[in-house]
Length: 398
Image (cartoon, rainbow, N blue to C red; front, side, top):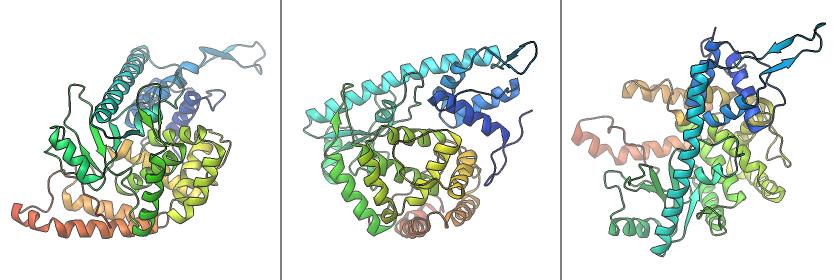
């Protein structure tokens, strides 16, 4: 039987141990899948892989499982059959993996089209995260794409001016501190145009230094054979770790982002990793790096040629607990469906628990939140609503 998801800070439940073993098979870090899930457990594993946006990696792990193995301790050398998913689930999983490959090809084509579009407008652009990360994955384990993030040089006012002139800006969306949404085209893919490389850090003095480093690194981006530019390893290491930290604090993070980051480290030169490692303490990201490294090495089985940070079980278990609870980008967090006031109370309690891990980011994040509430108070009063629909909080430039 599949046990209910436990609220964990110390131990994973049995199903998550099996999932980590399966993902380890998928990324090639585990030598043998020893678990024997029941049919019900296979269905849970598939559902959780969907929830965490790691269906392709989990399927790659499934493909590595032999039909049978032999236990040499048995006197008669009787085959020890390893369980496989029920036939209907296996067929569904296979179709999903094939769709993922087609979807990645579609996203690659759209990233190339956007690059050509902005080149034609005289604007330098770089694809962030997403399809750049997908290129780091092994061929056998396709990444699940979400949207396309593209950095466009020129600054907020200039980029928005061009998007409006070309009738590309989604006027129903409010541009944020670092990005705006383009109109959804024929591809149906959500596109975020970044005029800052990252949403950054909440702590003002750290964010100024962080943005300065990213602005220097983004200029060194290289064109790929897929027809779009990707950032340097230093950029990816710092930007994606900050991205994990921000989502961990504010909305939730999933296993896809952890595996993305693992491949970024594995594909980075030792010099890039060492440079970033020295910057972590000053940028307030050392503990989240220790958390990610613990999950990567202890649970997923990754080994790295150069250590970004020493793994910490304490911080790793805290991060893992929220991954288990929230799913990819917090889409399945327990606060979903709550009233506005109830959701705020749950979120504040959650952030209090995160204080030991990211104290400065939590405090400054709340300060920024209060500033935003005060700025939008006239609108809230005019609409006689405490919550302004599903509009995301804009980050205040400080």
